[in-house]
Image 1 (cartoon, rainbow over the protein chains, first blue to last red):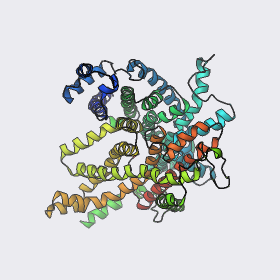
Image 2 (image 1 turned 180 degrees about the horizontal axis):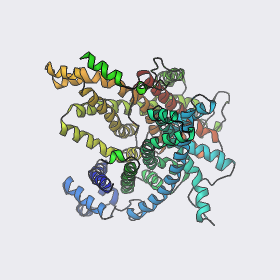
Image 3 (image 1 turned 90 degrees about the vertical axis):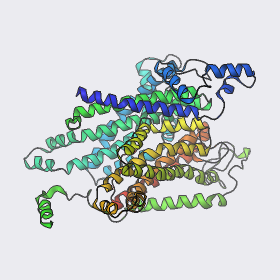
Length: 314
Length: 297
């Protein structure tokens, strides 16, 4: 098991290397002159030359890349153009908030997805099953920001049940209950799309397993329906893990819309605000950190995979 | 020879092909898929002729702003600048559809080319292409699209480029899997033995067989792509105001969420209908052609 995880870790290194190249390229394709945007239109030619030299922009691209990678690896993610402060602490705070939101959404998505998927697989004809199928299809087609907006309209603004935006109340807030109240609407919004996908995948996985020989064999041996279902469920776990892992990764990207709508102070909101301010160092750092979290998550999923399915460890 | 084949097949347990409804081939499209095909046709029609049928989508009358749905002369009401919402939805169909469709077309062509090349190439060619594509799987797709679009600057062509980049890897994977499967088949050996060039094999033998699963996969991707494209506009990375486009309309209407709550829902419903139609059509095509595609990005 340890060697399996070690192998996976080693395999992540070239991927992360590739990620850093892609992000570096997006920095380089930005049209416009970074020196001009930092100095403003009034900069003298001497100041421009000095800044160009200081930013290392005279170096060839490979040299610039190595320098940039060195800074990134030592935790120096650059300086925000709009906020004039270090990007790294800003992005890490935001990442923590995004992880809280994503974790809550993941729990909702998996519970809901498994419930709907199992229901529609085991009862293929009833009204409930049709409703479940329609719901699963609907949730993967609907834009997340509009679900968020509808929830705001009816549950927050209309009925006044939940707070509309932010993470804590402006005054007298703080504490777990306050966080929980603020968390519900964005978490449900973010969970809906992955829940739909998990439901669809889990449905076909249950159908696959139920058509396997061992189910018939166990039934023939006289096991109770409940026991048979337990064995069947065990066999759906690996594929469920794959889909859930993929979808939680998808959450890390998709939360940007949810965070923008609900003003949740995570990576998504930070990136969204930085887009309007053209604050590229923050955008790149946000994407880099999300990609890192995504790669780590995939590693965890792979490790879990090896744990529940001994066949793939070999 | 035939005897051995017969022996192996009869040795298989009968339950190898369980007679459940899920494995039964459906030769006809389901009713819902046919309805979806109709809706898709209608949307395409509106995108082509719609802008000629409605008035100027940017003509606003400040005195007649935020009129409710069902007002005479403004069937879907008016927005915050007194512009007719119905005209803007119809006029925006073309851009919203193109912004979702073009990236998928691009990804279909480039992804198939890459996938087929990787599938037919030797060990190192295959590795270098597929490992490069793996890098794109290390990003949450939406976030990568946002980063690329933000770096290129707002504008519909940049949003199309950004989406195309994130859609290429999954299409390439589908094409590569299918190509590798075909590469082991006898007729490919026959083609090679008959002295056909690599290019001829790729275009005559492989492409026609790789096309169906790719087309099915891409049809389902269109729904996703429309939602993503509208999402980029929603974030301010697509077309610029006052152009009529669904995602931008949602973002524009959001500011009136307390005074006119339903306003933001109208363009959102348009996005939903388009996306559901393509998703259902994709499902229907998959059942019809009985192809199994890879998990989505």
